[in-house]
Amino acid sequence: MISLQWLRPESSSAFPAVETSLDEPEGLLAAGGDLSIERLVRAYKEGIFPWYSDAEPILWWAPDPRFVLLPEQLKISRSLSKNVRNNNFEIRMDTAFEEVISICASQPRKDQPGTWITDEMKQAYIDLHYAGHAHCVECWHDNELVGGLYGIHTGQVFCGESMFSKQNNASKIALVHLCQFLNLNGFKLIDSQVYTEHLERLGAQMISRSEYINILQQPHQVVMPTNWSDLFNRYIKQL
Image (cartoon, rainbow, N blue to C red; front, side):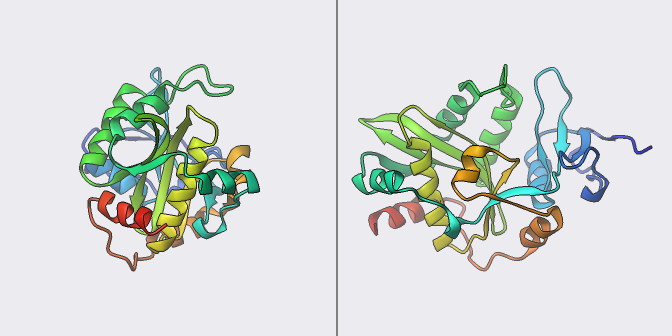
């Protein structure tokens, strides 16, 4: 019987091979460790992410299959396309990361009594953002943040973590702009991690974990700056 591996608290302790994960397709791989920048960056590079609640230790996952969205294959309905063209929102990147993740953490989720974005997780991803590894896209209306999403980039993959909407289609419009921006800059995948009907309607699909990791480990041909906001602003101005 295979038992769950516990990680030492030191950030340098290694993850087990993803092939040893338990309970596929969920892919529970390990527990314990910490949420340091070093460990989180290494985890995402290996196709691993943390997901747990306040009452649990840190749990690490590597699902098989993996739910992903190819930026160039985003399905945009007529109504969504019209909303994008109407340009009712001001679209920004990385101007309010802490606010975006805080709203995502407070949003009620269907069939979820609480949030997986614990205070510990929130601070860890804020630290990742200021270290240049995590980014957000924001929708603003009348100087109010009404929608957005955030995630982590590694290589040519953007790992989407969470999104929110306070106005109709705000998070979808943020996703449209993220896909177009990533596609222009040579990204191959947006990793959605686990299945949702919402993202399936937008074109997300299942691929095997081995295929995902193969793409993850390919070198990114575009050298991205640590600060994405200037590059994103140039993209917005060209629309």
